[in-house]
Length: 102
Image (cartoon, rainbow, N blue to C red; front, top):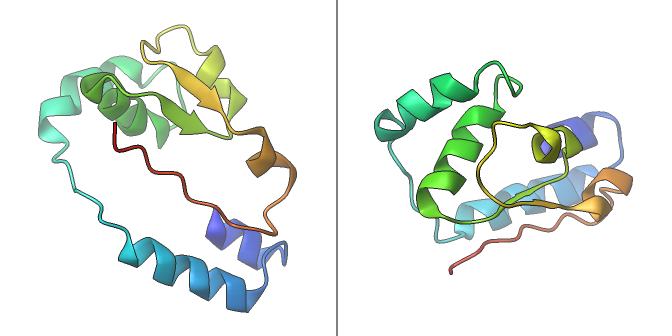
């Protein structure tokens, strides 16, 4: 998302670099995808190439998936709650990262 916004000049270069720095500072936990692989494959015909991993992880964590892509919310195979982030699709002048710890 940041890359596209920076390339189209919707996000200033300085803010784009700051967003990367902010992202690197988040206390993120990596999750191996092997346990999600079967579900990822089940979703491959319903979603774009990048989305099944995100959906499978949200389902496994029983967490809502925050996205700016309405297509994910409309996909019939998705079992997790999908929250549509409308502001992201209208403007990227202010980059915001939302992390759920629940």
